[in-house]
Length: 432
Image (cartoon, rainbow, N blue to C red; front, top):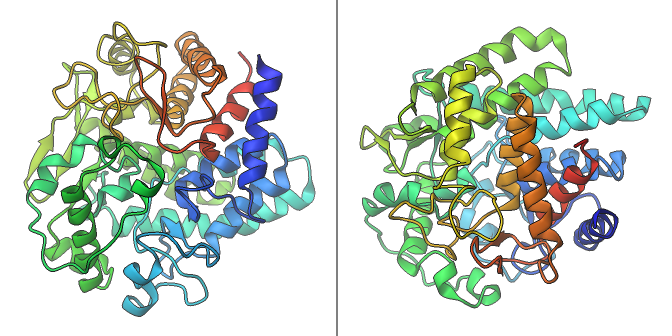
């Protein structure tokens, strides 16, 4: 099973390679996305270290002056996409945006240091090691931006300004906060996603999309300025998943250049503490915090498993989260085709098996959980999760889909998804 699957995964990455960077998918995602490129680099590290590192280098060439890494770097050859660069107007709105590349003004989860560490560990070449060290200052600047500008009050939880920043775009985690948003005057627009994914029930509703676009308008009015956004903007959520990824990324980055380890370890410790303060032992999950509404967002989704990603967690907490992970709400849900992690707990009121981030299983998120399990020594659970995902992805017609209906294994969303292929390559390269 494994060799043909690996070859097919590598072929997806080759087909989506646009020379120096990789589009996430052939139709739905024609530009460079930030955390997609990080996962793609993790997979490519087992195939071509030079190309894996170039994936990160090309992304960080579009870094903003304050250190933020934009969630989209636009491909000038792909004109038929919404929202395109003219909607973001980043260079026209902020003096910090790059002038030679069109980007969005949002960010995405900082998986990049995990990819850079993987490349550094696998490198046997002086040239690759030298380029890793050359990229490192940009990566450190990115981490400093997050630790300072996105953690007002130093609470150890990153603040996001838009559901798209979380990477889990249409998760029910955002429902209550989005319901507060009163949409103002918007120009007419035609969505790109519904041209590719034909079943509109899988995707965000039109009202949700209008709220997404209105938030972009408000961000532009704030000039993408963090201080102003944090004073007057209506959507500010402290994201536990993004914060746990950041803690892990800081620990990974500290392994590359020990001189900065004290600073990076302070970040890792701060964000570990922040996530754990949002952890509820009775549920086995951590919950986001709504800065505007001043309350925990107690919705049971895969993001709540975030403590597994932290570099330092008490063993009893790991036991509790693993029990939730393998229990009836997630990988142990009765009737699922494979024991994989769905994006929303199957016994939660918000669960929908086909809707974007509201129920389907995402291989890329399953990779994060698998990675965390291994880091905490739970290799038996990690191996079962890895095997289940590979069995799902090896099914005829799976076609490296973006996500899967957990009960029928129907491939949903975009097909030939690069990060799905990339995590397959990494899973197959990892020791059992």
